[in-house]
Amino acid sequence: MRPSYLITGLVVIILLLGLYFLWNNQGALPGLAPSPGTTPTTTNPAPTPPPTKPAPAPKSTAPGATKPGIKPTAPLTYTDAVKTYGALGYRIQFLQCHGTPGTLAIKRDVKFMMDNRDKVVHKFTFASQSVILPPQGFAIVSAREVGVYPITCDGGGAATLNVQA
Image (cartoon, rainbow, N blue to C red):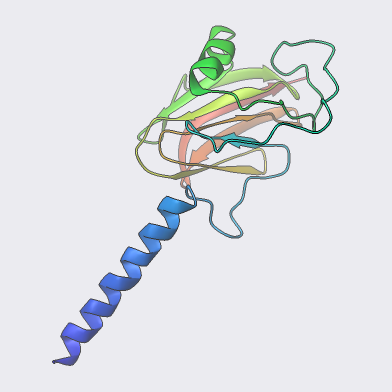
């Protein structure tokens, strides 16, 4: 067997293993996990066992009104997230790394939905936070610092986030 065929075969095997790893881990690579304070949610989350103790109920059920660190007892479905955050204008949808709307204005610590409609994994960054969204996945996130921040998708410009006091 010629060395070039051996090298080509080895490269193909490595690429297949890499794709298998990305597919099974929903794009979560070591060292590229979402920043603290972000809660990535996929369109088909894994079932979670019922909690042993009920979580303390927040004072309001409006998006962004819960305190950081309080997690919902049941995962939020994509349909429910779109209804909740889309109706309030707290949703930014990305298609081919282009955000719609192009600018999202929110108050500090108010949660909003980042929605990846592409069939590939993307890494989004804003306000020194990063979120890796699986294909056609979403995350409910918030920004803590007031300011105007670019939201980048895989390093390129995608939208603008205006965080107000």
